[in-house]
Image (cartoon, rainbow over all chains, first blue to last red; front, side, top):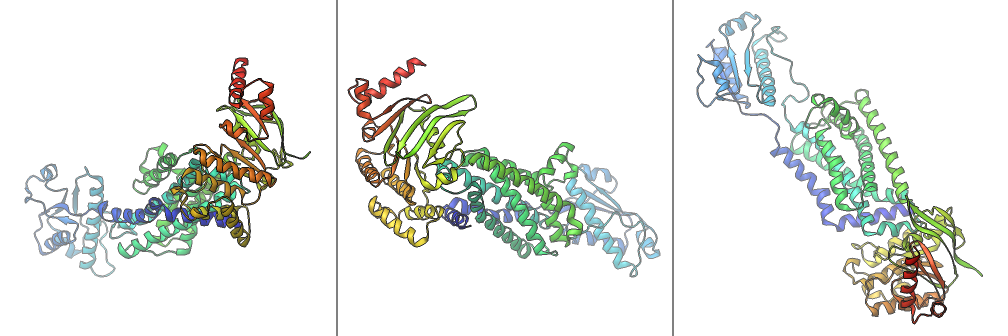
Length: 368
Length: 245
């Protein structure tokens, strides 16, 4: 313990004296949060919507007004040609058309089933799905306001309501995902670099001639990075919750527990990388390739796993971020507990144990 | 006779390449032993096996009476090691480096402070001990590295080309320190490319292609092979060995 403590103290000194690692560790998470929060805004707004109102009643105009006042839809640049609806989408003047057939007001008053027509330009899949979701929300709100409480018209709503992220704000998705990516990056990237540096400069060899075991060296070296990763995670969390208004409804303790397990997986990957390369440069590139990229691309963070080719779907199973992402989103946005998350939790723990075992075995083989 | 190092038919293979080929030698306690050889002769591999950094393929060996196959942890506690590369942390100060290594050798705080002060005095590093190691000239860094390897008062010191890339004045001062250590009874196992340094050794071995081609007192070897000096002896022995291959 005494030796581990002093190795950890030395490591903290290295971190504090190397401006580069400090920038990576502290500035980068904040910058990335801002970048994802503002620049890479996945919210879809300002969809050009043409309304073909054949009903021309008070109610139909009110519905039209609700669409345009929602903040999601804009009027088309030119007034649409009512006689040639097909051309509206083709010409690109609008990406969605709302058709209010004659009899809308009448059906509403008589509380009869009514079909509202929404045609969406599917060329941009994201916009298309967003447009229909928004339309549903607006329409069901409209119905709620015009019908007696508890009364519904079956078949009037186009599709199911959007759960958990009713505002469809992408920040609710990106903040938990960003925590997964940053934790992986800090833990794996920085540990692999710090071990590679000792190998590169020869200090590892010097250290190994002293009475200290590879295990003590590794534990001592990674402790400060566990702390750093946790600080970063909390930093993004605070930023996300207070600046971007991301909800946090679940248990913080449960999140910290899984955060710790996930960090252990990331550190193991970092140690594993350091046993394969001898220079900091290589360690950095390697770590980027096997940690940051999969955590962003193959975790379900940006692309949905179920839409990936089958082969890639299998690859995602060894990406720790895949499981952590489900866990952190579940805990933060839905308040899920272990009863819901136990599958992902089990996979994450198993994957972590496997990675940790391989990493320590390989490190002892290489150094011992 | 007590031996600090004994090696018998020690070998190390890396795949199909035999880096060290059945070398045998003994080093007496308190002796300065010069471990010479051409570049790539296998000296560093041999030293790494003696220091417990590398497991030998075959043969026998002891350091301070401990088996190099089974007791590497005990060996590590009883040796000092200083390599050709400066291998202390360049972003830490000299004192921080020494304090760190002191904690690795588990030297209690109070005693460690005294020991660092003592070494700083003896090795003449007091004036730059609180500067970052990266800002120091090579000669000073090497004395700092020597201080680090002496913290725990090891009875034997392995020095792998300790004076590489250093000017003659620094080299001379470094060797004065080594002599003083030998007088105190510390065994020194030194590799070097400088023949004037080799002459300071009581005994030397000359290695080529993994084998020890000659071993003995420098002056006696010069006479035995009818060579004018150690430099010629070295070149002569290496080229002879080259022809035999």
